[in-house]
Image 1 (cartoon, rainbow, N blue to C red):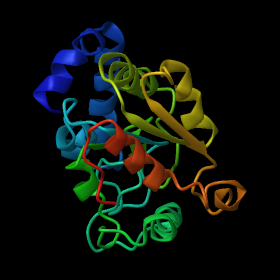
Image 2: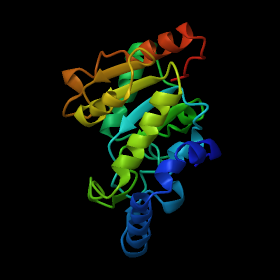
Image 3: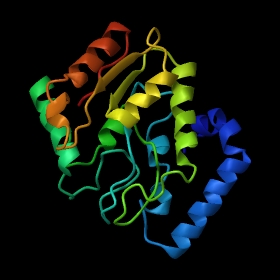
Length: 216
């Protein structure tokens, strides 16, 4: 992860709980097929520094299909067809702002612009969604969200689905823009994600506060 994240998250990183999490991760990477690749676990915090963060999009856990996850929420490796939730995100972007700058499903161009694509859980056993829930990632990613909410101003938080919306408790709406909607999954996208216009709303907010818009 970027140096500024290491400094800010130091109180969380240097705890017995985080040491236990790392011990668990070392064990499962040695004994199971875990995603993403170990060097990409903290990719969201590597590609998007704390200083550059302007938008936070929260996911649940990495794609459990081998070859898909590479450390950014909702994103897939180049050459991989976008999974259903990402397809729905790109459809909403097309309807909202007229089209996307994304080629395929690799969202790294967003991360490099200051979009923190953060999963609540950073690893998963291949083929088993939520298999690493409750192992220690949630307090760590809560600390990431709290740090952004408490130390920065005028960040856009896109919270889709019940689990992501729960993070709103950490965020002061007087200092940031909180955008909530149904999750983009095909099971819920028609219940409020389609038509949410979050991408244009985010850019309008950023521009109003003197920040460059995101090239969605």
